[in-house]
Image (cartoon, rainbow, N blue to C red; front, top):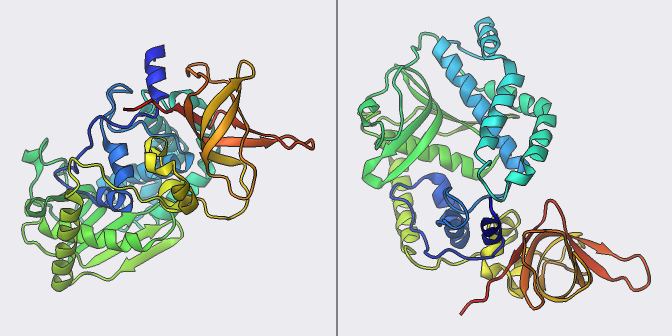
Length: 415
C-alpha cells in the first residue's frame, strides 16, 4: 500500500453514495439493518479509494474470527461425515474420516489460514495479521473443544444416502438446482424467489418421515436463533426448485457447544404469519433506498461497530451518553479532539470535543507514533480505542495513547 492509500484510510470520510439493500435479503442483513441502518449502510457502501474489497474494510476481531473458524471446521467435517455415510462423529468410521482429514489441529490450521487470507488485502488489518494468527493458534485447544461439542449434534439417520447435488447460487449454478433427495445435505442455500429471500442451512436431513434442519451456533444462546431457524424452515418450504412439495421440516434444532435446543416446528399458519412479518419488515427497510439512513446509538450497536469513526451521529454528547452510560471509569476510550500545539515527534496538546469518558478527567494530551498520518495544528481527529494514561504526580495530567490496537482518523473539512 503506498502513502496515498494509507492517507486515504486515515480520513474519516463517509461514502460518496448510500447503498440500497440487496435484491435478495438474508436474515443477517435484515437484522443488521434493523439494529442500526446507518451502521449497515456505512459497512456495505463502496470505498474504491480505500481498497478493491466489498464494503468498508473491517477491523480484525479475534472473537469473531474464532467463531468463523469453528463454523468452517464444523462444515468441513460435516461434509466429510455426510459423504462417508457416518451416522455420528462418535463412530469408528468417523475416527477414520478424521484421520484422513489430518485431525482437528490440521483442520484448525487450514481454516485459520483460509480465514486470515481474506484480510491480507485489508488495509486496516494487514499490520496485525501475524499477532492475531498467534493469538488464534494459542486458542486451538478451546476451539477444538467447541467444535467437538457442536459436532455431537450431527445425526445422520441409518439408511440415508448422501446426496451428490451441488447446491449453489441460483444465478451462477442454475443447472444444479434440482430437488434434493433423501440423505444429509450440508450448507444448503435455499432461495425463495417469490419473496426475494435466501438463506444457508448448515445441515438439512431428508428422510421418508420428513426433514430436519440443524443450525450451528458458536456463541451464546439467543432468542434470535429460534427465529432464524424458523425462517430457514419457511425458506425451505418456499424453494420450489429444491423442495417442490413445499413441505415444512418436522424438526428444527439450534446446536450450541453446551447442548442443543429443539425449536417447535412451524405449522402452516405459523409460516403464513412469519411470511407476512418478514415481507412487512423488508418493505419498511427498503424505504431508505438511496437515503441517509438513521443511526441508533446504543451500547450493543456501537461498542464493536467497525465504522463508528465515520458515523457523525456517534460523535455527539447525546450519543456518547446513550452508548457509554455512567458505569465506572475505563482506560480505553473513543474521543474526538482538536489538535493544539505540537510538543514533540509524537505528542500533541489537544482540546476534547467529545469523548466516551465518564466520571474522570478528559485527555489534555495525545501521543501518536503513526507515521503515515498527516497531523497539523487545528486538525480534528477521532481516536478509536485509545488508552488513557494519567500522570502519577499532583497535576494528574491525562494523555491518550494511540497504540497498536487503537486507530486514529482525521476528520476532513466539509462544505
